[in-house]
Length: 256
Image 1 (tube, rainbow, N blue to C red):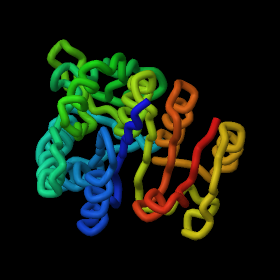
Image 2: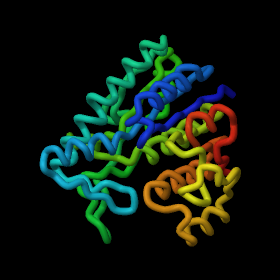
Image 3: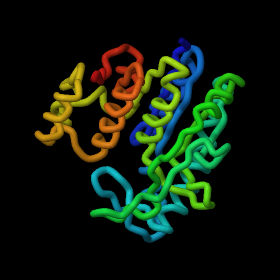
Image 4: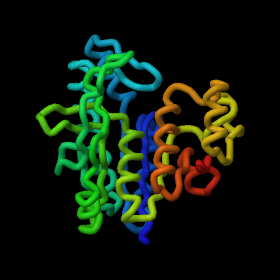
């Protein structure tokens, strides 16, 4: 079975020119098919603040009101997505920029209000695996932003970690999927202030302990929750780390 690499980038990687260049190099050098998924929350928050709006986050997830939705769409599906595509084209990587609305590739629904109203946040209903496969077999490398749609004309802001995991699961019966979460740290750390405290391997039981102890928190929660969910649904491998650790194999390996 053909190996498919899915690389998710966000946070400091997108904000740092040198790291972003390295990430694009890594992605362009993957052998065989590959998909890039990106966030961009930091840039969106900067623009929201500049426009006089206060970004709102709860448990690492954005509260997306109408103003926030307009900005994240502009940033994720617009300027940032096309910058990444252009950067990959410069590396002879035939990238194609996509939102979930393009080709109806990722359909979602507005999150149902329970304890927290997340606004125009989208929870994924369906990934068009055949559509992604067609693009990959045509020689394209999809670059997917964090904007989805409900097929009723409404765009939605969907967590990029969730998108990466959902695409990985949807394609797991067609490819041997390796899901790579790239961020600024060398891996999942026992001590957030100590870069050399990388946890080499985490299984689902140990992960629950780390959450209970508060070692894993905030933005790492949706990342790892989705990663373990993907492992339970056919994804071959999940790795979490920075560019160097993902390249040399020292990133945190997640196992069932």
